[in-house]
Image 1 (cartoon, one colour):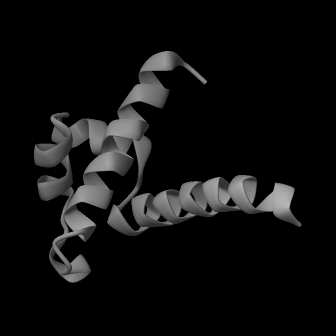
Image 2 (cartoon, one colour):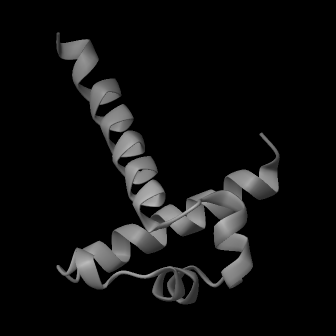
Length: 74
């Protein structure tokens, strides 16, 4: 994957996680995510079709991290 794509997706995932810490997942919009991430609005939609898809990507990444940490113990 292109380094720019990797960086942008990382920024968007980090922004989503930061907004989720506020507690109200239903109020998270693409506008809030891009403002938090510091990327353009259209950029969001070049990477994800919607907020739900980004949320699934965040969940997948977190589960992957968890599996890597737990796997040696199993």
